[in-house]
Image 1: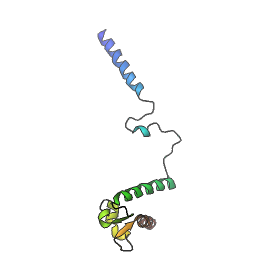
Image 2: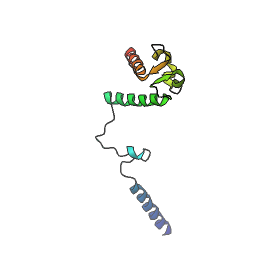
Image 3: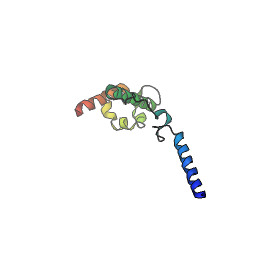
Image 4: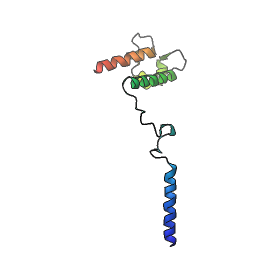
Length: 114
């Protein structure tokens, strides 16, 4: 009898724990990403490119320690891709890379891959 009561008690507490997590919620995701509306589609095409470009620009600005809107070779060390391709991106050979030059380099690289 005691074992049966213990079984029902454990069964009831397990059900209560399940009731605390909303249906469809993924406990591994941050709260802001849980239970997205069904009509929220992931970015694709131009929207995805715009998001990637915005993130790249934010990383570029974070690496620009002196705030002059260009990266010197020293500042580029904090931005691995730019550091590795610095000479190819700096087409004018002035020792600094602007975000527009980086974007032009990436667009040219994409065109060469096609």
